[in-house]
Image (cartoon, rainbow, N blue to C red; front, side, top):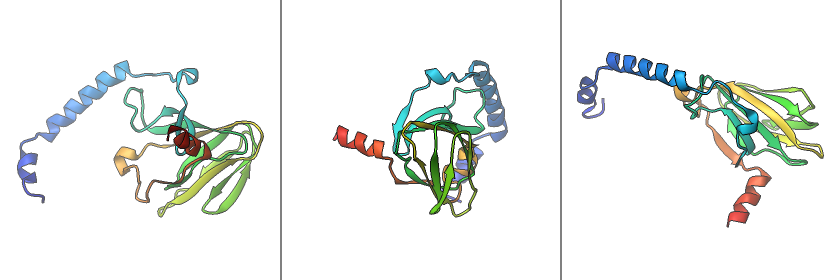
Length: 175
C-alpha cells in the first residue's frame, strides 16, 4: 500500500460518502436535462471529424449517462479520422450515402439507413468511415458509457491514429 494511504483511508467514512453521493445524484436528477434538442446542440470539429454530442461521459447535466451518443457529419468525398478503439459501437446511417467503413483493413460498404456494427475486440480495432457520395452524410453513433467503470481506454487503448481532412485544414488555418 502506498505510504500514508492507510491513514488517508482511515480518515474517511466510505459508507457516509456513498449516501452523500446518492443525495447529490438525487438533486442532480431533479434539474437534469431530459430532452436533447438537436437544433440547439453545437457541431464540434475535432480530429475525428464534425460531431454533435447528445450524450458523453463528461456530460453531467443530463438525466442519464449510460450511453455515448453523437452524430457525425462527413462532407462529400471525405472521411472521418482513423481511430483505435475497443469497438462495441453502433453507427446508423441517418442521412446520405453511399459510403464505407474500414475496420482493421477490411472494407464494409453501406448505404442510407444501414447499421454499421463495430465489433468488440479486446486488443482493439482501427476504424475509419468514408463518404463516397457528393452530399453530406450523417451517422448516429451509440455505445455503452463505460468510461468511468472501465476507463476511456477500456483495456485496449483509445487513440487518434489519423485526423480527418477538415481538422488538418482547421489546424493549418489557425497556424
